[in-house]
Amino acid sequence: MNERQSAKQILRKPDWLKVRPPYSDECRRIKSMLSHLQLHTVCQEAACPNMAECFALGTATFLIMGNVCTRDCLYCNVEHGYPAAVDENEIRHLADAVKKMKLEYVVITSVTRDDLPDGGASVFADCIVRLREENPSCKVEVLIPDFKGNLDALQKVLKAKPDVINHNMEVVRPIFTKLRPQGNYDVSLKLLKNISSSSIISKSGFMIGFGESREDIRQLIDDLAAASCARLTIGQYQQPTLKHWPVAKYYHPDEFAEFKQIAYQKGFQYVESGPLVRSSYHAAKAR
Image (cartoon, rainbow, N blue to C red; front, top):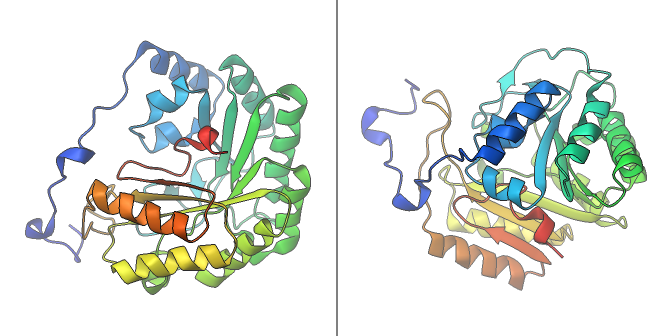
């Protein structure tokens, strides 16, 4: 067991977080098709409780460039290490899946690929262009890593013109370095400022429940507002395994509603805030 945590410290999940995983025939059909195409979705990797709802709404979040991350954040259950080479057939398979699933809104994200010269920015760009060519009516959102602050890499994604570019802050400033030792709070904010200054919609998100204060949360909302970020998601952190950072608090839905109201008061155009909210939740509904 994690040295930060003893059996007595494990918090019991509240009722509002106890949801049944999706087992519909439609979900099984989609999972089978994705497996055949050798594609990963964040929906499956994270066992997202909203998966059935999002699939039904014509939305899915694809994970490109493999499923091994070069970073090791203390809250994340994605495998970390040295990734394999990027699959040259991945983009074609992705475009095929979007067409077969009849998706109206696609979110493309990736593990962090610090091993690639541009952090994988060119792969994101190629995916966007291919999807535009083969599925012109489908809207495209990308959820990108920080590219180590490389603005030339970001420019490749901007030039491909997705509908939305999302970069998640994930955690508040006081614990950012501890939880994301290979990331940088100010680098992420600068990336978002550059997205916001373009013609493309900017978006970010973070989790709460790590032990942050309410003032920490308000400050992160302020920082994102100062970066002119247009859209925001706020969700509850849930500890994947006992080896990961422990949950310090389960926030009540009323508290999430309060943070949502604060964000709107700060000028955000669209906010999703709730215990089960994830980065792509209701992404297609944002206007």
